[in-house]
Amino acid sequence: MLRKKALVLFISIFLFLICQTGMAAVKNPIQSVFNKPDVTTEGLEITSLTFDSIEGILSLKVNNLNSISIDYPQVTWSLKLGEILYKTETLPEGGKIAPNKVEEIQIPFSIPFQELYEKHPSLQRIDVVPYTVTADCNFKLPIFGKSNNSVVATGELPMLKKPVVNLDSIQLTSMEPNQVVFAVTASIQNKNGFDIHLERVDYSLVINNTKWAVGNTRRQILVRPAQKSDIPLNISLRTSSMVSEAYGLVLSEQDVRFDFQGTLFCKTSSPYLKSFELPFQLIGKKRIKL
Image 1 (cartoon, helix red, strand yellow):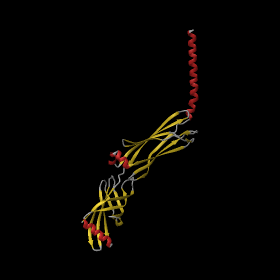
Image 2 (cartoon, rainbow, N blue to C red; image 1 turned 45 degrees about the vertical axis):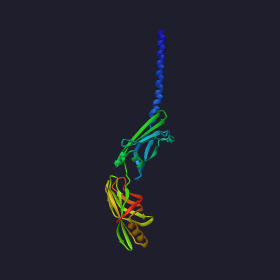
Image 3 (cartoon, rainbow, N blue to C red; image 1 turned 180 degrees about the horizontal axis):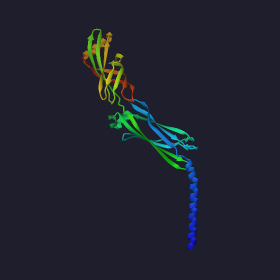
């Protein structure tokens, strides 16, 4: 009886092993001809850079190496700026990747500088930050089931700080019966680690609702990193009504309301931002100096 039970157990194990070997023989040839998709990235591409924000695209290339179509992966990507996790996002699934085809998944990103600096003040003290972007691609594949393919890319992103424009002073330099001349001093403060070359300023100046000047200056002004430079403007009033009004403002020794606006045209020494135009508008009160 004991010998019979042992024989039955032996036969059962033998048949089980045959079945397992048979299934593996069927499965392994299929796996050997089915390739997991390949995922690559070259990192972040900057498409727009201003003092307000940096815009760009993360491109992932998914290569389906098989003769049958596969589902698009579920993609979870993250962006670190230095040690700061700035963003993480999971994209919705959907669609198919055709056999033996490379599909590109483009993921747009946007970094508003003001919002970034408010949340992470340390980034305002640097000009370039190293980034790490990670993308986890989760596939549902025939035969294999779920499969993960992760890619990592590193690089650098510029951290721009908007230059500050001020109207520093309005000073009377000459008074004659038919002409009044003022020296207006504006300034530009460079908060970045690169040189700014100011090449032209288009401007208009309104004093107490009267337009005093519209013009431009092409004086070449160099603004060093973390420095402030003056923008001198000379304004002459010649019409009798404006001369009379200017006399009255000077003699009253009271603050005047000003609306100073225009555009700066600049070049820089930054490899990321070769040139820029910076509109400005300043509204306030100021006393005319004698």
